[in-house]
Image (tube, rainbow, N blue to C red; front, side, top):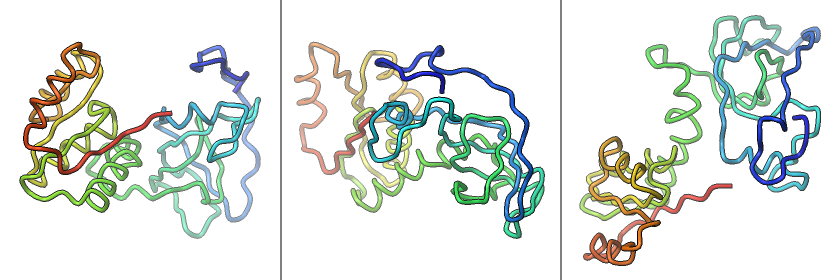
Length: 217
């Protein structure tokens, strides 16, 4: 990270730097990152003030989730050829002792990129918050805010699998269309529409059983 953003981070707040890899120590391994994530939480990580995590320092590698392959190892728990996902940062190669790794990716039939999406933190958030906290039952009406987002789109599909009626709330006609056509919501409402109150009343005529509230940084 080159500088602190004012408002939304821009490309000139970052720079690409080439550097020699340090020597790998005992208990460490080298990962070639094939996919890097861009997540809402990263917005707060670029701030000067700490939130739930310390800010990324100027001149440091941008903190992010990444997925890649172990290409060299001096760690007994990781072998060459294994695929991993964790907080490895925006960098092509990462040397780690394993602490930032969230899991080994053990699904050879699925694209590695999914470990940063529906098979990663987004999917885990959607699944456990809905099923463990919301506990929807077949026939329930499940309402999802930010329904076209990475988490919300998964919530709607999981709720449908559970036999629920799903209503998505999103901003703008393209996102409403995506909720209906791509993610299978039974109904979708544009909160930017002037008819929003009437649309809410029509969609929730029989009440709401579960409301899944998404927030973004």
